[in-house]
Image (cartoon, rainbow, N blue to C red; front, top):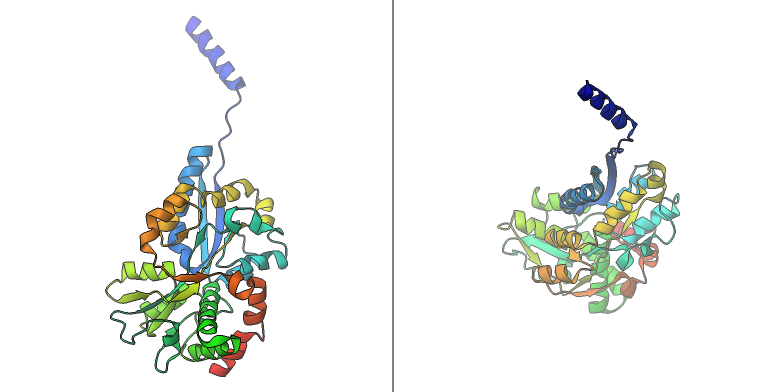
Amino acid sequence: MNLRRHFIKFALALAATPMLAQAQPVTLLNVSYDPTRELYVEFNQAFAKYWKGKTGQDVAVKQSHGGSGKQARSIIDGLDADVATLALAGDTDALFKHGGWVKEGWQKRLPHNSSPYQSTIVLVVRKGNPKGIKDWDDLAKPGVSVITPNPKTSGGARWNYLAAWEFAKRKYGGDAKAKEFVGKLYGNVPVLDTGARGSTITFAQRGQGDVLIAWENEAFLLDKEFGAKFDVIAPSVSILAEPAVAVVDRNVDRKGTRKVAEEYLQFLYSEEGQDIIGKNFYRPAVSAKAQAKYAKQFPKINLFTIDQAFGGWGKADKDHFADGGSFDQIYAKSK
């Protein structure tokens, strides 16, 4: 009887004790540009493990990839992104300008102007380099077929375009000569894919073109997977690409995911995040340890920034990629 009374007393006490609330799983959507697929597959797994250990909550991160400009437009049109990890700050600025999807001053929220990783633009050729490609000027020669995506839809394509422009401006003297050179280069482009990964597929799997203008990380992924088929050429000069990341404010506030979304981006700056960045052939932006660990895999290239050469993305977009800008003028003539 005493045992029964003790059991009832224990059951009543247990019933009166508030149960710890089980953290509900959360899902994030990372809307990114083409060549970050592999990076974020690995990073998302690491973040989910970190977040589970810290909070006890399961988090699943879904990925969406495509041309950076096209991805920005998808968010503006209602794609339910929690974070935007696009190819260039100008595409993220568009999220502020067209609907206030991100708040003004978004680029100052995280270190290094919200750019946790960097890259540059290199050239990929067929094994043995049968066309003798050594630098940008070889891409404008007759009989050289060049694969690069469309600057109207791809952030990577804009980096490609501006890298070639600045090379020519320095070598031949002035914007007029640069425009003439880039016109010849695009006259050698048989097809404009919408994104960088599409151009990689055109070059690597469909066998089109003599040279691919590519993100550095994309070039190294190709070399890793098909090393016997391709060579990577480091040009004499190229642009320092600084992809930026941002929380999509309107969506996270509506969905209640701000805390986890902010920590997701902050984790890119952690030592583990920076190591994953280097492992996936991006240049770690802030970790001295990761920079030293992966320094040998990156070629020494004379790099310039978008601000130094073009006065920032706002001016570069207006001069080169807006309707009627230099690209429209060049491409109309080249075809």
